[in-house]
Length: 160
Image (cartoon, rainbow, N blue to C red; front, side, top):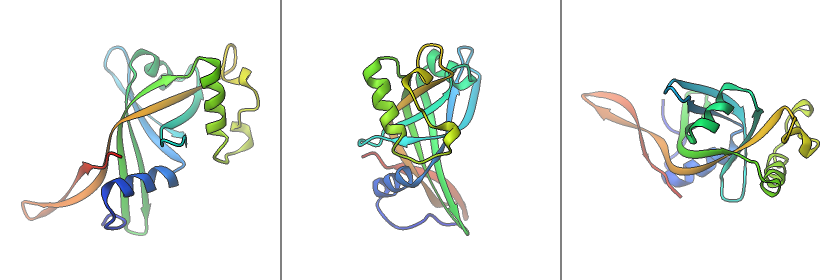
């Protein structure tokens, strides 16, 4: 399987982030146990990643305990595979201004009505959800290389 095109890595990374709707976020709990969760996401103008989750979800608690996360957004279409890998610092949005901004960012992408945030009370206080933001620290894309006569998959820098 090949990557989608020969565009520069940072261009591929932007395309994948812009086009994707779901990402897998990897977190670690306070005892060092890893956890991965697929989530719907939206992006702001700097392509920082936002998602909404149950405030009691395991990955939500993990973000509160340890802010370092790893994220992958991947695409595969009839034999073509591409992925962007992101190391980030994530946080639950708490200040009213940042929560409202997060609501605006989440509204940029259409999703099922049952998941839409209708009021700030749904993502604060006793509300069931919280908004999380991941700020990218390192961005890489998938690359295929020859190694020992075989094809292996690695990563190459795609920071932007």
